[in-house]
Image (tube, rainbow, N blue to C red; front, side, top):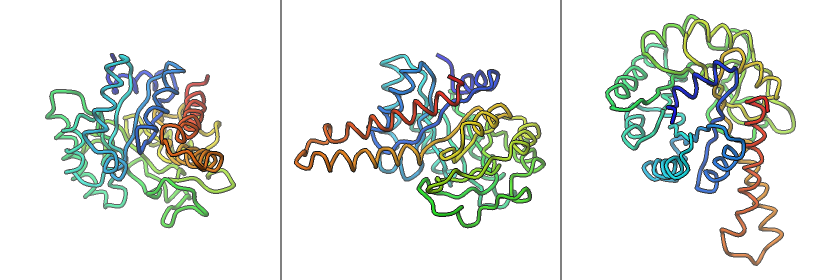
Length: 288
């Protein structure tokens, strides 16, 4: 089976993207896995610090590993948005395939210092573990928004600067980079998210020399996905749209079946709704 590094490199060569979907429970895991399996595509499971605290760090690693081994399937696990070196190490020790050190709110110097420590620890392992750096602030929460998150700028001067991306990658050795290119975490209510700055995507990719990752992909248009992927983003993160689909379907399920108390019965529509969203996104990312 290919490593995650090989899967991402192949996607980049084909100008398609590997879908990265966050989960909070086993229902989300099954929804993402079944969607990927239906389309015969590799997939990345993401868990933020809060999500992995809820599921259990070693527990989610064991669940993903069990699917990979039982079905001989390219499903991978990423420690999404991790804010300390200690928690990156925790994820690596648990068996995660990748981890993101999120230093977007730090100075460039401090970001480099801490990301470098994460890379050094990953390189000390007997297996291939990817470390992703983050440069540029796009918000922190995967939720429905009334407005662009406070502190997020969308003008050219607010976005990740190619020269800083080059420095961060060169001094840390990160394998992937998540930039701010007009993307936001979460999803605006009732209207599309801002358009991505594709020119900046291409410039950052050229300067950084490593694959880029699109965070905050919920709410972007299919055209933006395709242009960003072609410009150098072979991994796309989706969370808010999956969460919203799950919540909405679960509300209807409970309303329609008020006397049902078996979770495996009233949760099924939510799982199906998540699977539909994931399948739709994977088709966009892979020109299917």
